[in-house]
Length: 282
Length: 230
Image (cartoon, rainbow over all chains, first blue to last red; front, side, top):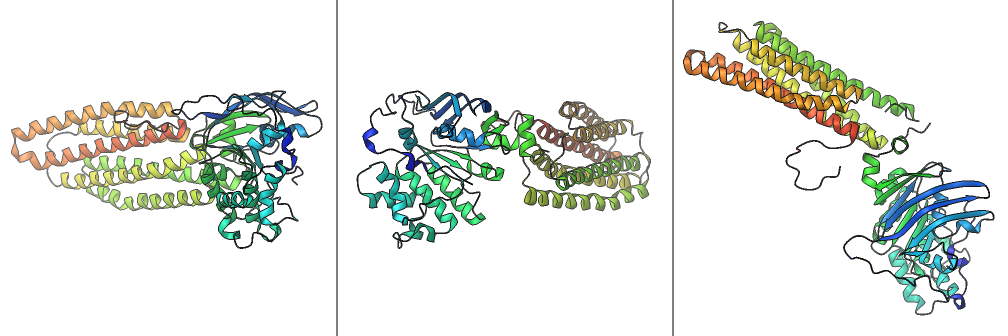
């Protein structure tokens, strides 16, 4: 079902590392939670079809935004716009501002490849590189990005952060496919973490997992939040309710409502949201 | 609430719960009316009937609690459904307490019927009418999900309190004049107090209806030290 490839595979070797997108690092107040990611008037589509209209929202640093909505509402497109993966599809277009720490990621001079190092992605189905070992899967992104240093140390750190280390530390050379589905998904999270992104995008990361593996991924999300800003798309409303700080509800290409998760699930302001979270969509 | 759930069984579960709450509310209303009639008409047999019928109110409380727990566990209700369940779980306690107060009033009826009537029960009847109107209005606000009506109930409590105070003072004066009436006057005072408490439970009910409809908590407006989550 998932056709796109992991971001790390799209990244070019480091000689292209010229115009860093981290130029204008703004001085931020330490008091208010600074928005890490700000989306302004984002619109996107394919050819003449518009699938996302005029989306405005902000994701505070070190928080989790859950994106919910019925199939075809534009939530996956929204996620793919955030690291400019959407534009990889022929005929796809996106307009509007996408500010990461104040830098407009949609600006013409931004190298999407470098952007995708700052904004990593984890997909619905675990997609480890099948011919590689567990260790090499995590290190792959580093190699492809030409990141030097002690890979062994980085591999251990990422596997620890992905809460997988204890389960695999004695068999790092084993094939990634020897892991269970839930472990493979955490391996993919470790791989995404290896290039030290600032934002993690997750597209239904637990939809192919059983409840225990799902619980582990959700538990992991709480830990990752201490370091990363996370945007997660999910069909599972209870999951959105459990893991996120903010929830955004999309419907037919419009952002209907975004707000603190507890408010969205106890007293949403928009009737559409109300109908969706109570299961009244006919 | 107009639109129905995609899962119609869930819809029916919520509707059944609403019906049970209304049935319980109706029961309590009838219990209150009968208990006051037992006082006014000096009818101990009717009072005994009220005491026996309380079992049904209690049974409904358990049944409704059970239904709420089942829905919480199996449906994970959200938004207005969640607020409805939260409301149900709370008002069922108030309704049960109101049922108990009707029983307490019935006990006073039995006691008062054992001695000659000292004077008419006009004010007590007026207080009972007010209380009953409050309950009916609160239940109506609940059924229609009408927050404005619930707010009328909340505002209406002042009248009830004023009338209770008037009865209290009169009975007090009366007891000071003639110590032979103390027992009967005390019984009447208790009956009035029970009605006043009954009215307070109507307020709780109305406050929960406002929460259910609007998602805002209007309880304890004067003791909000910390920022709420409304």
